[in-house]
Structure formats: C-alpha cells, structure tokens
Length: 356
View (cartoon, rainbow, N blue to C red):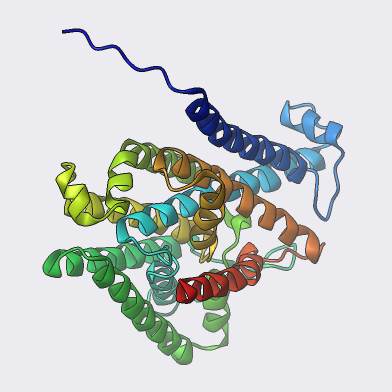
C-alpha cells in the first residue's frame, strides 16, 4: 500500500511562513544588535574599528582589548543567557501548565543567591579586591560559582522529588517552588545579618546579575548548555503541545506525561543553575519573553521554542546594551534593568489571569 503525502494548502503555507519570517526577523535583529553593541560604551568605537578588531587588525591595542576581552564575551554571554532563560521559561510554563512558571518564580534564583552567600560567609570568600576601574571583584569567583550551582541544583531536585512523591501536578511544583524561594530568601537574609561589612558587600555584589563578569570559558559553557537544551526541547515539542491540551488528552495520545514533565523540569533547572551560577540572578527574562513571543507565533512549540530562544537573546542583549549606556562610564548591572522592565509585565500577567 502506498501513501501519498497531502500537499499543504496555500493558507497553511502562509500561516507557517509568517511564523518562520518572524523568527528570521528576530534572528536578524539579534545579529544586528550584537554588531552594534560592540561599538557602544564608555569608549565608543566606530563600525570600521570594531570590524578591524574582530579580524585581528585593530587600530591599537586598546581597541583590541576592549572588543576581545570585554565587549564580545559580555555580548555573547547575554545572547546565550537570554536564550537559555527564555527557553527554560517556555518549557516550565508548558509542563506546569501555568503562565507564571519560570526559573525566577520557582525559587531556583533564590537558591543560587543563598549558595553564593554561603560561599562568602562560611567558605571564606569574603574578601574583596579593588580593580583598576574601581569595581570590586571576588577573590575566589569559582568557589562562589560552585556553591551557587550546587544550591540551585539542590532546590531544583527538591521540587522534582516532591513532585514525584505526590504526583507531578502543576500545583505541587509551583507551590513547592514558592515555598523554597521564601526559605532560601530567609536563609540569605540570615547570612547577611551575620556577615561583616566586607562580607555583606561581597554577597550583594554577587546577587547583581551581570553579564560583564563572564570570561571566554564561561561563554563557551553557557553556549554549549543552551544549545543542548534547545535541541532537547525541540525534540519534545510535540509532547509539549499534547500536554498543553491536558494530561488526560496527552496520555490518550501516548505521551508519558509524568516523565515528560519531570525531564523537562530537570533540563530547565540544570540550564538555569549554570546560567545563574556564572552570571548571578537575572529575573523576568524567562517569565516575560515566552508571553511576548506567544502573542505572535501562537502556542505551537515547534515555533514557540525557537522564537522564544531568539527573542530572549534579543531582549537580554538589548537590556545589557542599554544598561551599559545609561550610567556610562559606570556599568549598570543588567539585572536592575530587567527587573524594572519585567516587574510591570509580571503585574499585567497577574491582572489578565484574574480577569480570565
């Protein structure tokens, strides 16, 4: 028996074409902003100067150092982290079937801040040194990164174990995340109360989410983790579409709902833990970006996931570039700007949910 594949109708082809075009436009805008951001900052560089520095023919050593040691790794870190956080937010909202699901609202970010505070106060990284630019740097940054990663991963595993114990329902996962967030916030406040002035400054410094602290090794790790997560989520796009229709419907279509939910949350938690442990707490990107993109491409995860990843990269890169320029020559941590922009959007989501 031979099966003939039906040719898509012109209406469906145009429908798909609009989604692909939107993702393409987002990608072009991200690439253009990436190129533009390399020339913007306290030391403005021309487009030609940036291009010459990128190909190894910089006008001077200062321009080469600015591009290769500061701005390019910072911009690429913003792209990778924005894509990863937004992608995790979209996956969490799908598997939890909750529009408020994100790494920030599930307490993973708070757990990372607690781990960093433990490293500063208990593990002895409470000393600070002044850099030539007047900024403060942790003396043992990898110790703080490791502690933040372990703490955020532990919080993610607690949420997942609670879900497995009582059934992986969206309510259990969300409420567990809220409770853990409150618990880790209380623990961080206690450690801050016990710290001296220098240790307190170190704790506060780390909690400022900032892409400028990333080096090339960390950029490579961030990019690799984000690409691997993107591949995993795209392979499960059909499963997430089925889960969006309801657990019973998904099970009727042959989807192992509990397994898909557990695995999706685990991958999202791992990606979030890596990003936060390297860059600090960056909120609202994972919450807001999927909702903004969903208004254009719809809820089909075949298009929502890649569009959200590119949209998150564009959003965080734009915020990082704006934060670099607002108080130049001082650098404003990008987490401050994302909080200012994300908090109003969070309130809008809550109000829209109540009206619904």
